[in-house]
Amino acid sequence: MNKEIVVNSRGLESRIAILENRSLVEIIYERDFNQHLVGNIYKGRVENVLPGMQAAFVDVGLEKNVFIHAKDLVSIVEKDNFRIEEVLNPGQELMVQITKEALGTKGPRGTCKLNLAGRYLVLLNSKGHIGVSRRIDDGEERGRLRKIAKSILPEDKGVIVRTVAAYKSEDDLERDLSFLLNLWKQIEEESKLHNAPCLVYKDLDSLKQVIRDKFTPKVDKLIIDTKDKYHQAVKLIENISPKLNTRVYYYSHPKPIFDYYNIEEEIKGLLERKVALNCGGYIIIDNTEALTAIDVNTGSYVGRSDLESTVVKTNLEAAREIAKQLRLRDIGGIIIVDFIDMNLNKDQELVLEVLRKELSKDKTKTNILGLTKLGLVEITRKNERERVGDFLQQECPYCQGRGNILSEESIFLDTVRKIKEVLWKKNVEALLLEAHPSIAARLIGSSGKSLKNLEEELNKSIYIKGNKSLHLEEVNFLKMGSKEKIKKMAIPLVEGEKLVLEVEERHINNSADGIARLDGYIIDLLDAGSLVGEKVKVEIIEVNKTYAQGKVIEVI
Image (cartoon, rainbow, N blue to C red; front, side, top):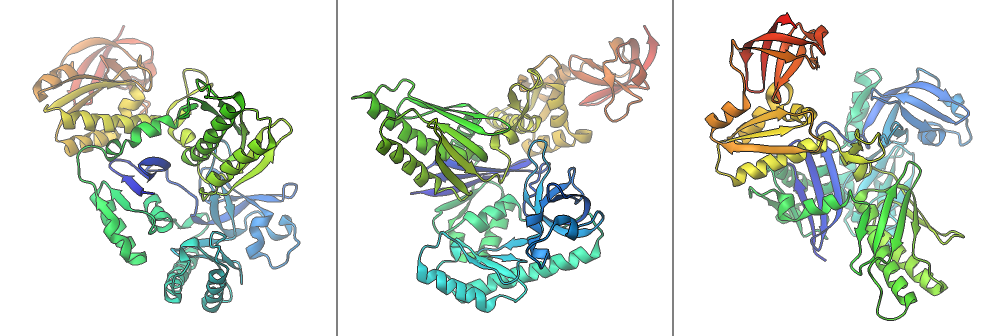
């Protein structure tokens, strides 16, 4: 099987795609303005203790407090049987590691059982605990690794030996442990320097985590599309697996790397409810607050013999696709699958066996609980990250939350990619486009910084109009041509011009000023914040690329 890791980090987000035989099996996102929290260690302060739930909320400086359960305190409590109110008090300081991202209305979850992951080992603050990955099934090798771990481990720490440590030398494991112990010491020293709440350790970014956890000898290529990330990867791999450095490649082609590998189309499919099967059947995936429901249908597939064989074949293909989609979409929690009814027990067992086999490839903890009396298959999968659909989408403002559209961040990033694609292909000097004001504002950025950076990268002039009548996802490329021609179209005003405008809203950063628009071009009206809804006569006193300033002469 050919396995590749493709990294797209041009822009404000990094996307890491894992391909098997050129087919997408996992996608990981990281955005500059939406960083992952799992793995971070904070010095926190107990906000409140809930004896009835045997839980507490800890302020670590994030938007929402971190939830911890009594069982997450085992590493800092010597006795086995205790109640949380006996151990924690409001105002008490403690070290907390994030184990689960904030999802929906729930805040992040944390633990006092701290761990640091290396290439071969996971260091724990659980005294004397030694574990070996269950994926290492060679009994003799498990015993060897356990013996090595016991001989090199300090008395006050615990360790888990990772799957990739199989058949590695004692020197390899000792070197990894030494690195983790030094890191632990740095974290302890950092925690002493600052008062709670504060961040004392930030876990590796997504690319470094993927290299540490997933870039093994089974991976044929790691392809990265930016030089800085490429050099970071080479440096890290040189330290942890130098023999794999020959498998790292820099992608320099102007065509976006995800387009080259046909990944963009596969990502779009992750937002669809309906997933087609090769046999002609399909599955429907519906996410709710409580669970994910998956329905299997034969669709256009009618088979070649009898109904039962048609049903079994569809269910078998659906089982493989369901396992793939759970991993791809990062679906966690309770999952209910409604396979097409099968009359024979042997057929039911065959489908369940295929489902178990496919789910065993998923490193995220997944359990099949069996069939219910209604013939539904119950599955649980650990929630480790936000679902891809939830990450890329937001509640639709046009349907009162009954559906989803792409989030503003996703539309913004997708628009930037489209701008790059269009301007790379066209031999033009300038571009004029219109977008919803929210998207236009993101494209322009604070003080025009985002737009300026994009223009410098492409060596082109870009003009952007805001249009409230557009759907949030709608972006129109109005005109391309020479700088002079596009500038005349984009800026409809000159200094000293007088005209009548309506004050549409207050300025978002200065409520004393008002905002008006002319053909999508923004005019900042000085001291007109109290005149929202009024028509005013104004004089233009300054004209810039993305906005003009005017003063009110008369209220009409």
